[in-house]
Length: 117
Length: 113
Image 1: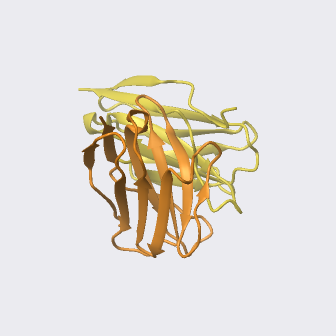
Image 2: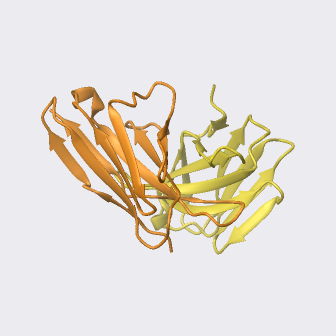
């Protein structure tokens, strides 16, 4: 199988603080990881593509200085929500891509529920 | 503009019968399609995928059909089980794009016992 973990699963923080979310591929190496955000009853919205050893590529409308992404190794990517505000409250999900074949499938983590008070 | 559409927000099926979930796309450059299943407050779970060079892929109770001329794909679940109740997302990707996924809006499947 292809297992992706996220930590923490839930976090509550005060407005103005920063929150770090970790995404790990447990049994495979992921050269590319993706970060998504899901609002209630909506689809997953891609925030950024994280490549190991290089800068992340952000989707239009996503503030790179607010959502810091670091992909330091082939099994770990982190998303830091800086100076969090209540509107940042959401469900954040990462995925990791298994390489090696032409068709590459993304495997998703269990998600992190962020609540900013 | 939604490039991947799931026009049915919900579907109810009796246990043991076939569930058919539909998905349409507009970008003819998409060459790889996937179906994911998602429970509330969890990440999506990969179910099955299909390359654009095929028109059918089967894995156990799950079969995905692709009609490229109609830009349409469907997921068949036979027989449906109550544990299949979840939101199903179709997704599409294209080569040369780091395989970023474009998701549909999802269909809530409820399998009635």
